[in-house]
Length: 200
Image (cartoon, rainbow, N blue to C red; front, side, top):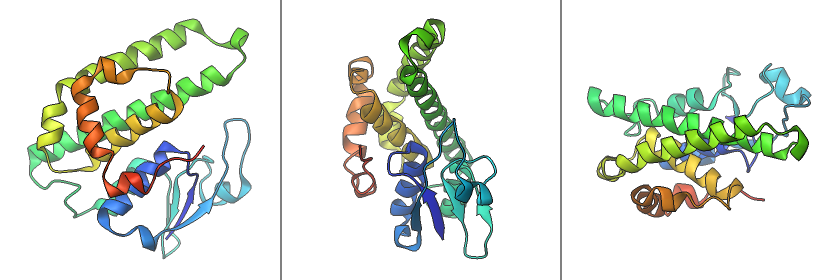
């Protein structure tokens, strides 16, 4: 399999953490791909017209072009996707929250990269409020996260928090969510997380 990737993308990291958790990372050939909101990468667009990473090309030439789909494809039938209905729904809910938080953080970072005069204060305030609300919910569920077997939901939340550390170092999110911070301190030591640390 070929993965169009960047070592700094939190969406790519989620795919690679999933692959490491499954023990199949060595089956994925990573190809560097620079994509941006302001331009198009012709190589990526030949596979994915949305010009986004990660994009995974399977052995038969089929293309999967969204991180959630890629993770679910890789993890199908594994312990990362619980079979029991309630556990599965909980894992998928966490996966959605982690994905949504990552989306929020990437958009927030893009806004902060604009010249100060062009930034929207109401948008920045709204994203800060959404982050605080999400951290509050996850902090309340930290004990359940800790007690549950590792799933795609854990991976998504862990990668989102890792991106928060990587791109928002000035935000003291741990003070807002101490129980979640304790869970993440343990989860972040997993080999899959250590092997996929983003590079500056």
